[in-house]
Length: 153
Image 1 (cartoon, rainbow, N blue to C red):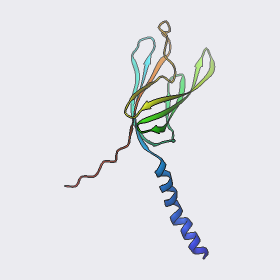
Image 2: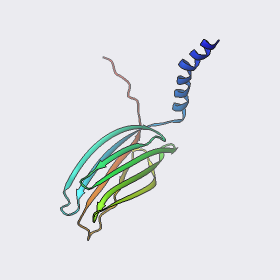
Image 3: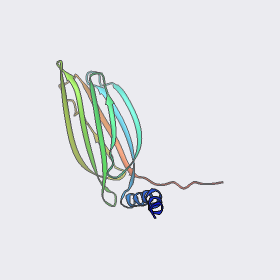
Image 4: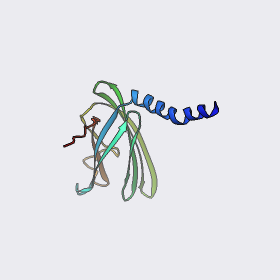
């Protein structure tokens, strides 16, 4: 009897957990374009494109390393209804300013529609008079994952 119970727990329970997790979850594609510009010259210092797949409620984290700063930006998608989504954007930035280490963190919830482009400035936007520093811009598009059927010839 113990062996039968062990076999059930070992083989069947992961299938039940997987089935339960997928019944309420939706898979999303995240297309992310990260661009960092130098504030003094407005030239692009870094341009990085990434694609991620995630399940609703599970975060996607981007780590950004610069000369005198490090940033971690975490995006989590939650379905609201139909194509309406809630994007939770959290950022933590550590940088050196005047010889002191400073840390900024923020969290924003952004209602969006699937397929809509979103702009996010995790380090803020440089003011017109401020020409020192870097301007970091994330552009992303979140869409529902569509399983493409395999075509055999």
